Length: 304
Image 1 (cartoon, rainbow, N blue to C red):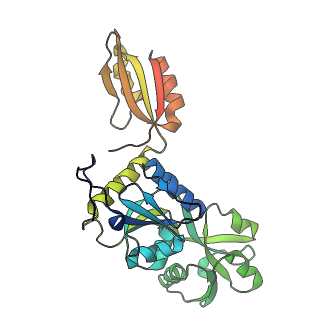
Image 2 (cartoon, rainbow, N blue to C red; image 1 turned 180 degrees about the horizontal axis):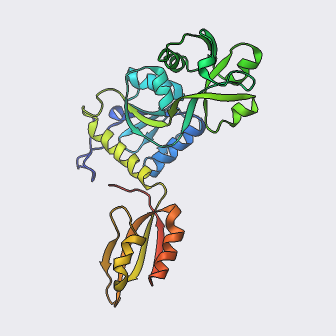
Image 3 (cartoon, rainbow, N blue to C red; image 1 turned 30 degrees about the horizontal axis):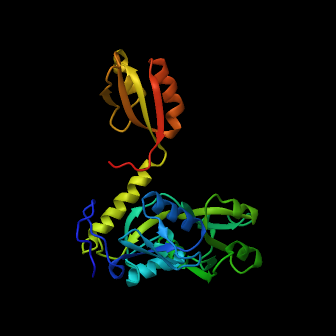
């Protein structure tokens, strides 16, 4: 195995091609787009050899494998991949032994029980043995079993919404984001079975072995990007006489950082991280305190 002769700045060493950690990624859809965007923002842009490539280098430590999101828990549990990014609903449905290392905050949706608009409004009114069309049979059966109910599963691979109208099933269990697709198909939500979002998963024990350092560094890099979402870095020259009021205006993460400015007279430089949604009001409040030279910038990463 080839290794660099000198340590890399972050303390890890570059891996040879045969020892890179394999990261399974969704091969298409919104989950794939969001996962690639997150990795690129973390400094791990895939080096693709073609639009249809099934693998790509991610920096010096990782190789991306592009597969169906539903197959990713299987790949990771079986050792075909060391890590993966997929939906937590698919992880739960697979029932395979993987470790959830980090929630990623995108791909949020809900697994819901839904029926026809002209049907029952309360799940308690569904009869035992109710027919349920779903591509999430484990989740559906688990939810009803926990409530002491029996069901009849009608497995489908897609377009579950049509099943109640065809008489194939009485209700469905399916993923929704806004619920608009259900409404368009004459269905209404009866209950939320589970919430879901994209997660970083790993094979059991991966953080404890030789790969642990690289895994922890990957998690930290992704988390720093996620923590920066919706945040802005704000700087302003503020009169010293207004410092007592400044913390109210710039609470930041731990209060503003105050720095003396050379030849600035009665002004000091105030630095703080603020919510993007609060920037407008914060600038107005700073102007009322007599602040000058206000600058707002985006944040690529934010470490605790």
